[in-house]
Length: 561
Image (cartoon, rainbow, N blue to C red; front, side):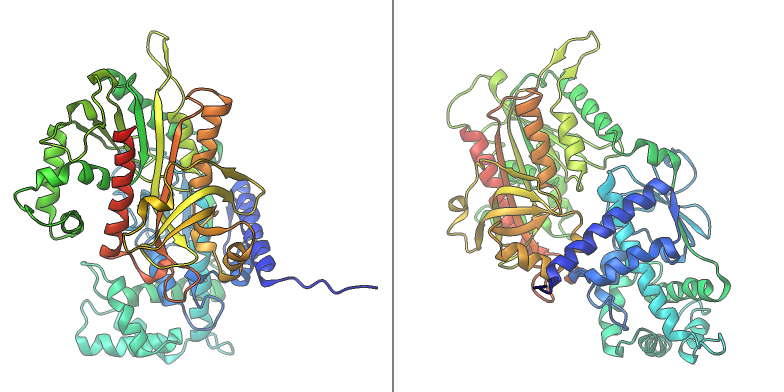
């Protein structure tokens, strides 16, 4: 008897994610594609079938506004005007007259070559390419929604709203009345209300262009209309050098070797080392801020100090802490390798009771006091590249091989939570890699009990390392949550970090096999809740408390080890 096999929505979404990545790899190997041509159709269809939460109404006729904000914060300014987008390796543009354009929420160098072309440097591996292509696919889908609404099929002419928007943008500066009239026309074009457009309008504005939103919508529609009427199709290309270099750890090796050279020169390389992957402020602040700012905050609690330091208005306080830290054992290393991963090195032998809030549980000789090595966040697969290279022995100029004495590796970061809200904590016991059978259980030195009684929800269980945060949808995440995997959250780097650690400790034997590992995340969003995705905005001061709870606990364990 034949039984009808019903594909669940979660299975369909999983298949769509797989098609997206297979297609992206194929197009990368091919070297070019036209997003609105046959080659790009598979990407568009898969994304429309997936309907990621972060892209909201992508599959509906009306335009998606929050998703557009999210995407444009991660792509270079002006990309909506470009017909040709070229993904390159680090090919020397930084030495040219071109000025780098760095997106607000992604550390990548982009260069506007001319009116039609934007070059985007890829130095952080495949995850960077997946991220860009996914966002571009969203952008192209939205651009053709605009074209479909403004083009009159029978005549090839455009509707009155479009013509009025075009004439408005010919003016150098708009009055409030002219701006509101333009918003009304744009709202009709996008299938949104005047109120909805007005609420997000300022999120697109820049100092140079307060009416940037109108220009973005115009250029998205303009290029899509030209494709429809003139066949002038946009194209995405990948340079031969990028295709040749990708996956060979060129930037990661350069990054790791330069750092180990600095440590060796400072006679720090053979000291015990604790690695922490975190932001560039929390470890420094936890170590020094209480002492550096004792006059400014004599009686206030720690959280008040850290909240003040995180405020954009208190740059003088931050400068004071940085200056204090630099004089008392901190070495800052700005990245010059292309990884965009800065480093801070803290020599604990130089810390005293008057400069640091932490002390060792027992006396140690100076040469046995550890180095705390803090590296900025990696991006996706870049986590494997950087840690894998960092944990290799260092070869000196005279051929000597120095093995690093790695005591612990701690990973702190933001992640999506599946049960809870922004700021809540996740303590993983294993990482599983989305779309594969790969799983990485480990003994986490941190546990839920370490953070109880702080007013935050603390979850303990499995974390999923996803291929891209912008591709997640509720059906896949609900499946993970309800399955026996006991999944509590999702992030992008955990699997890659743990793969490098296990490779170095258990296979290559370049570090001790019993190296301690710590993983802790705080929730940046809940993709299962409408209005709580990454597109809903940042954490603000909500992230201060969990950041410093995790940082203090990591440091506490290091000083008590």
